Length: 90
Image (cartoon, rainbow, N blue to C red; front, side, top):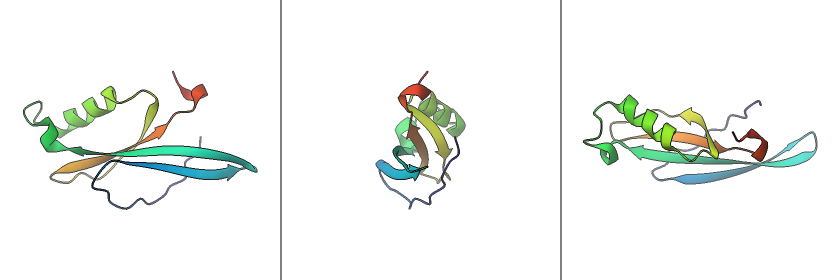
């Protein structure tokens, strides 16, 4: 599936995004979720930020697919997921 790229403003908390699009005249709703992962929430579990990101993705709700890992800061990293359609689910 092709992706539509939208710029989403910097977020400081979790946010759900619903986008209605028409493809060949048929309306579709695409659901996105941006999770803001705070490094401090994983203090003591792993000093390696890559391990933290891998764990978050591995343990995330399987009804959602990873779309984008955002630019990390010293305090957090945004991760975007898109809701899978029923036929996409494994």
